[in-house]
Image (cartoon, rainbow, N blue to C red; front, side, top):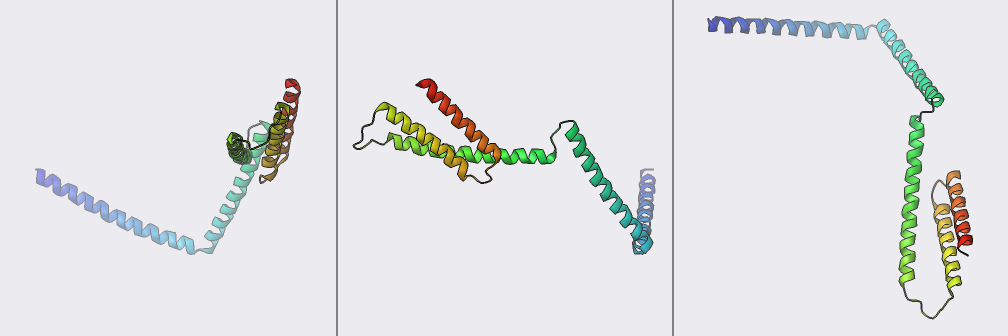
Length: 164
């Protein structure tokens, strides 16, 4: 009984295999025939052009909707990412310059002895020069950067006035 069942299943598998091979072959012939037909190719071309046009419109409408709903667009996120990279580069440059300044400050001064107010003024001038140097030499110097620089300088001046 088990042998009859095994032969029957094997026969069914062979029939299925032959049917699928014949179906695949006939489908391939049909596809090739359709692809060779110029009318069908023109319809496919028109359909793909229409699809591309609709995708473009959907993108435009989604950007318009995002603007109305005050949701950042892909371009907005890319711009913010670029600004973050610029700020990181500037911070790295400031950090390197501060390290250099602290190392210079640790070096013993040879013969000069300055008063406390002169030292404070020199330090503030060095800090101001450092900030201007970092912000002015960085690539893509933008309005935001210049505004940030102005605010930092204003804070520094107001803090110096308060300490006096």
